[in-house]
Length: 301
Length: 67
Image 1 (cartoon, rainbow over the protein chains, first blue to last red):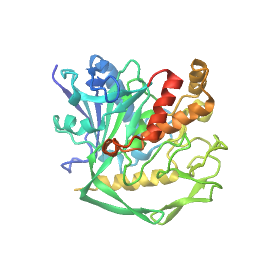
Image 2: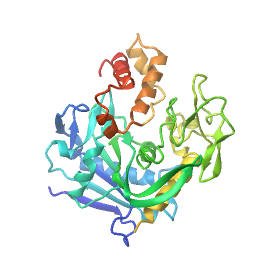
Image 3: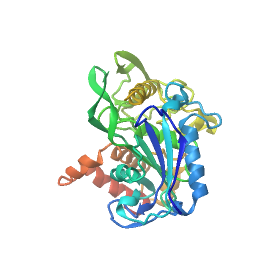
């Protein structure tokens, strides 16, 4: 069967390289991280399953799940300008360049980030964020790597707490996600939160553990009233971690929430009250960061 | 990374009776931190082993019987 390349949304067709999200059926799995052993990914035998997963990714990115509260990419200033393409190529052998996912013990699907750019180039696709959908029978927990920036092609400066950063227009390595085909609810958008952020210019990190410092996590006690500033605008801290509470042993604290009744989307959305993770949203600071960052990338020539 | 489901910790500890809740929480913390480390830089620094990565492997083996 020839490769099936489907443009799910055209995006800004006036640009040679609009901001692009790629959703790929992962051709091959590395059996364990760093093993160098590759086997076919069962997703290549399940086109309907891949199509359903791709549609799920599209829907959650653009705020279309039932009861979904987070509408960041539904904003008419952002969403319609984003190109979304899916790739299903069942004719590829299980080789190193075709393996976009490795199996990280015990059950984590890990993107092999260095492979994505050259893999997509074969199909004339340049992605800013790329998902590899996998049907690994054993590794069913999604993960992501942040974007690595291309600092040679310009950007727009911003600052966090007075420290200078840049929203770069282009990436050197796209943000990458390994997404199990069984993923549902907010998982694909949570992983987008990681992948669309940056190793060097704002890491949006997990908030469900006592984590290291990132754009959306600081450490210290007592928790101050102000979390910090983004472009000289002050954002409050979340004093109570929504309804979950900060465990007494934690040093982490987060920016305040738009809806304090539910966890942040980068926190443990599975613990949302009433069992409705779709109510979870990005915190205020993270949401503003993404709006600014995507606006710069969408405005590139 | 996808956060753990609500019953995950209990399930893991049921299957690893010598492990403690604190070890599970440390595992999740080190795992989240692993995905904040740029793999390109980690490869360059491979000559100096990362004690957090070693501890993550140790906890993975204790909690899940695999590393």
